[in-house]
Amino acid sequence: MDHQPRSRHLLREELERDFHVVAPESGRAARRLLEDMIFDLAIIDMRLPDVNVPEWLDDIGDHTAFFALADEGELVSASHILLDALHYGAERVFEKNVPAHYILDSVRAYFESDCFADRQACRKVPMRFVQKHAACV
Image 1: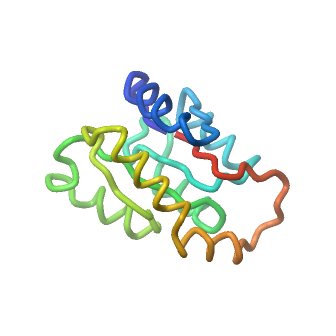
Image 2: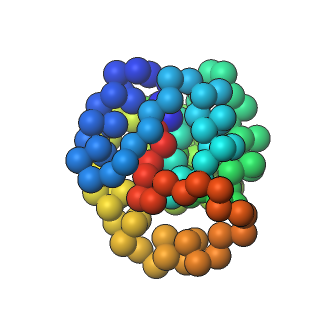
């Protein structure tokens, strides 16, 4: 979930080549989706204007893996963004200026990893509806 529509659209187009992708229009909409469904992976902007992202990550961390996105330069200048992402279990952290194909390659690698297999085997929540190999961006 990226709060910038153009960035969200470009990333969605790249990921839809291989995955089922849901791209909600706002942080609140994404939060509702992640409360109702279990996704294999969420790609979350660490600075969503309408959601307290750290609080939200604390809620979804047990059942949905996530990649974190930060604005260009934030990973250095606002190190708390990186620390929050890592504290809440981000599988990967990217600056938004990274080419979308690089994120796609990382998503593919994640789904082929032992980390993904382990998470699938150890889910602790009832599976009402699971979007297999899906990303919520």
